[in-house]
Image 1 (cartoon, rainbow, N blue to C red):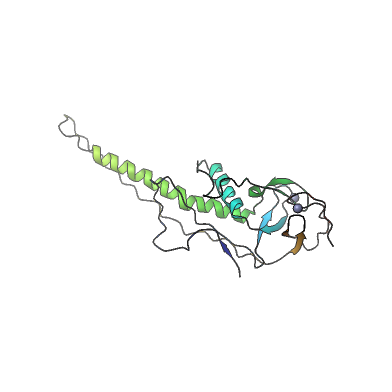
Image 2: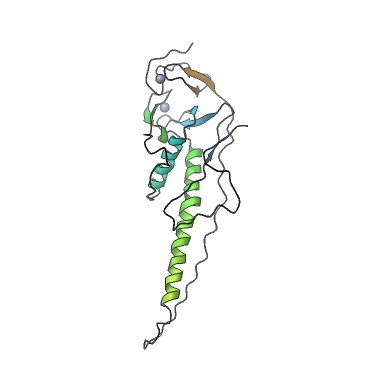
Length: 207
Ligand SMILES: [Zn+2]
Ligand SMILES: [Zn+2]
């Protein structure tokens, strides 16, 4: 079994709480590849699966794209990856072209959504309610005023859901070498009609 961790540090119990008052949000993303280090992808046009090598910048872009779709304004890609433009990929079956960050499987998308919910949304909601609690607590009892109103407010924090799990990924499909880009992809075993490199569109023939 092989997997690739994109987070900087291994999970540490007790180190999981996000401080939402900090403007920096860290996501712990552990995307599973197959034992040949390939990540499964789905073409958004024809719905068929193929695989490419994993690209951390592409995962970061996909995470940002899905955060935005959830209505969150989460900054930019992690340090060192700001300039990495999302690269275009060509579907090896129908030749539909899309951003690499748009060509993820439903499983990967769901995993990223759950990660955003767990690592960002829940801590943010809890922080907002706890701030509200504090401000009501401070204003209570309005010393010296004629009318004294007591308001109590108690928010039960939303429990942090368990960390989502991605994978496992079986080592299926056949490997195709793209000599032009020195990259390898995996496509369905029965498929022989790859005409262009999915990265640079150089014509290819499968030998
Ligand atoms: Zn396709
Ligand atoms: Zn190429």
